[in-house]
Length: 631
Image 1 (tube, rainbow, N blue to C red):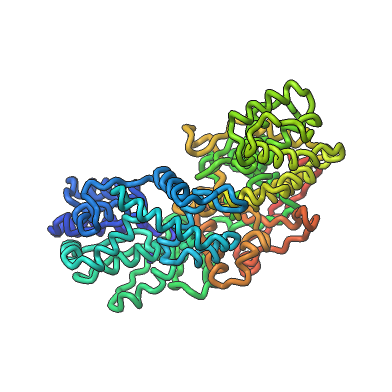
Image 2 (cartoon, one colour; image 1 turned 60 degrees about the vertical axis):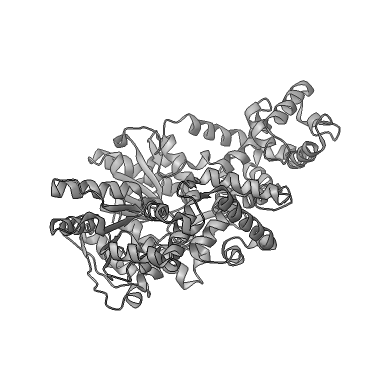
């Protein structure tokens, strides 16, 4: 049981090095990790320790080891040994072929797009659930299509077999099938792997835990390293019960607790320890540190999201003056939409930043889709905005969108374009799509909306785009939350032109995504907590700590979900080495309810006040004049 910052990777590396130094043949060791990068890192460190390269060591991801095993017994699976592996794009293309073969009309209203169907099928397989069960849990709005999606799944499985190809899920399901149904294969691997080591066991799914259980039946020598307190990926199919039930699955288990943290100050760990202690389902651990005492974490209560953003920006600048480089500072949030106001404030203050594991709030596809309609209203000659907005409609591709724009340029006004007669040159399906576009645009021409940006954005979102999100995106619920936040964000602007001006300013800003080449020491890091796991910074801000936001409102009545939310807070807190800032906005605007009072997050309410210091901040009219008074 490896607590946060306790040297989990070091434990695995030294275990492998120890076994090899004792003369264990590399082929008898199986080291399973979750990324190829982690496997390479561990192998390199083992090589440095031994000053020799271990050959024939079986190490890599579950999928890598699965593929290596399946190649040896492909015939038993009715495959040839030279079977191909479908990457995600290939798998999606094959799903599309199956839909076409079955003559399913994906243009049918509210029917999920192939990418969403692929996600539904994959999740069901990895969690050992029926399609209907997955739909009930994550996609209830598609329950009416259960039978159709099952038909697509069956056709997909058949096509892969005929084409001698496997997807990533097959590398697990067929590996597990092989171990359970082919005696000579099970005998070979279970006898060969005398020592099985698994990294991040709390992140395994049902299939992966089943594979390890089968492989360990002969020697019963498994070392898994993980931390139930950092199990935060259930939405990907990870099952925390795999690690919680480990003693039941392996009754002769020995449990070693790594409770010495090499990262954080004692004050940060005291807070994290007390928070996670509120979880019922866990292995109790108490992290202690080797570091000297430092200042207590700070709780900052601010008026609203704009005051929160102003505080973050100001404090980041102050940390820079105190010698803390930008790359040693991170702003963490529960959901991506919570970064919108922070990003805009950073831009205004010219503080460069990167968004880890994704794109900045206003660069996301669904945000740009909605804003394309706004851009057309403000600048009708914006051809790119026309093409983006038009191609959202069924039956209209970039070619027809370009022709519509050319016709508009000749017509000269939006009113003429919205005339029922305009667009008769289009074929029937494209005409239907264009009529949908007109239906969205017509009410947006009302003059009063130019001075009501939030109302304008709301009309676009509710005109059918929200339904579009549910059918086109895998993480639809998260994206819908983003859209609602866009409406709230627009509320602070007095005109649509001003809103677009700030967004244009954002587009010309030099901040980049983490994937682009950049000097890491020049950029502040913004990240969801999920993306921040495994990383560390000198100073960490956790924003949006109010009830209904973090923990998420939907988790309050579900003990299992609430415990995972608390683990998220634990992970976020333990990313900080020296400084931890917990920010609670007292009010927030909600376009459906207006300005609402936001209670402190449950996770703050659970903490003893002796664990943090409360900072009083004086907020002036200008966000540039936020003054911090440490009380």
